[in-house]
Image (cartoon, one colour):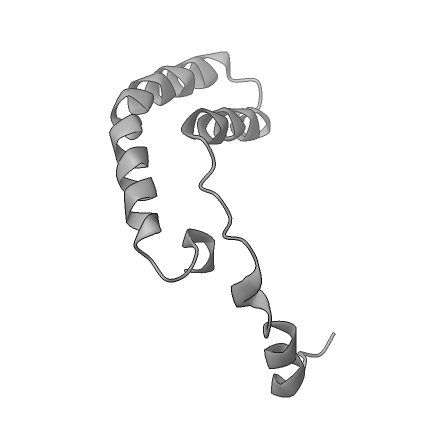
Length: 84
């Protein structure tokens, strides 16, 4: 598939500024999806999964503050966090 000519790309994005900004996903949801996504990679390594769950729980304590800072920062930005 060949790339679209520049004229079509700019037309496609012409109304993007009118779209609502994408929200920053809740931290618990992000961590939960991460933990789900590593199950196939862990290849039934119960010890590795247990260790990862333990580390994720520890990260959650620090991550709450980071999540709040990210949300505050995002409000000051011209474009959505996902566009960067």
